[in-house]
Amino acid sequence: MQKVNPRTLSGFLELLPSEQIIFNTMKEKVEKVLRNNGLCCVDTPVLELSEILLAKAGGETEKQIFRFNKGDTDMTMRFDLTVPLAKYVSLYKNSLTFPFRRYAIGKVFRGERPQKGRLREFYQCDADIIGDGDLPLQADADVISILSQIYKELEVDAKILVSNRKILIGVLSEFNLEDKQNEILGILDKFEKIGKQNCYDEVKNIAGEFTDSIFEVFEKKTIEELKDSQIKNQIYLDGVNELEMLFNLLNAMQVENVILDLKIIRGLDYYTGTVFEGRLKEFPSISIGGGGRYENLTQYFSNSSMPGVGFGMGLTRLFVLLKELGKLSFDKQTYSKVAIIPLGETENFCFKLASDLREKNISCQVLYSKSFKSRMNMANKLGVPYIIVVGEDEVKTGVFGVKNMLTGETKKVSLQEIVKNL
Figure 1: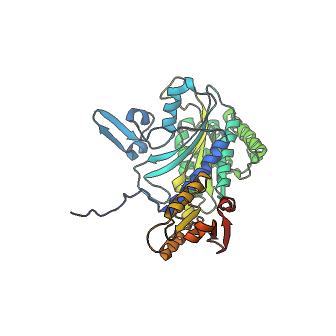
Figure 2: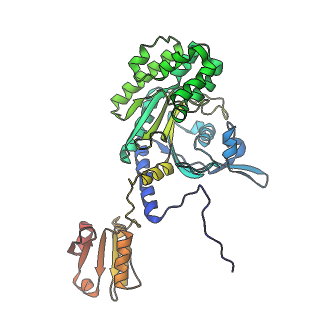
């Protein structure tokens, strides 16, 4: 038989047991925060009809999708969790309660070139609040607060940079540059990549004499500075007012890790107001979560007006970055809290003991076969916190030694006391 060389496709991530445990723990912590904030889990299919997923796609998105036909059905693997949400709320609108608070955690697929922090298959986490007709600004503060809580729960040192798209749109409208809006915002969005001078020069090629005035606003750091600006365009004033209200709400929610930064622009044809991004202290140019306000989520599927606000974060990306920083500890290869090692003719007793412990929600496993030494080595390698060695004397006396593998201490306890001690 010809052997096949085992290998994994580029851009697809497989984890060892010790890594998978940490990733799963991160995912569980994120879900805990989302549920504590009243969001409902919505799981949509990995495969959708291509006409659904590609309804608003174009350009780079269509180049990066995984698309294929099965019989007469044209299908695409989901590349984000937002378009499936738009389909979902359009389809089930009459069965949902609005504002609809939803989260989704699942794999998405993008056929782009793998690079630092970017994979072809990865876990995405989305959280959104969707309105029916309207949605108050409190929802914007709500989702930013949720993202902040997630960082706190994960013990991640991150800042959330916040802006409002209306501010720069208002500035451009002040100088009658509406027809150049997306082009100019696209250049400003590259500020961190190309540097201030290159950014300025590219904007000047389009905006000419108004470039200094644009950058004067673009580089402001506080709401007070924005309020003191000479710009009187109503869109601009609305943006500044919304930003001030948002920060007041975040302050009331005791969200401390937020910073005003007008360089946060994000999707040019999608977000319409509040926008924000999370950044790690050690990787200030890499987004670890971001989103904002959008006015019509379902425009391609329904005539209903459904404004919303939400964020997406790549859980896999965050895991890879934290691993690179050495901030994750991979010292366990099992969820078991206890390893039971039988000696002599005690296996039946040990399996019964394991069953009793599991009924008390104590995760455990019986280590059987091989020598006693090899089983002790296995327990060490697995990173099991406690070991119970069960011999025939222990079964007769009903007294067992429970060894703490961290301290090396062994306590002699009765069968009834084992659960209490663990």
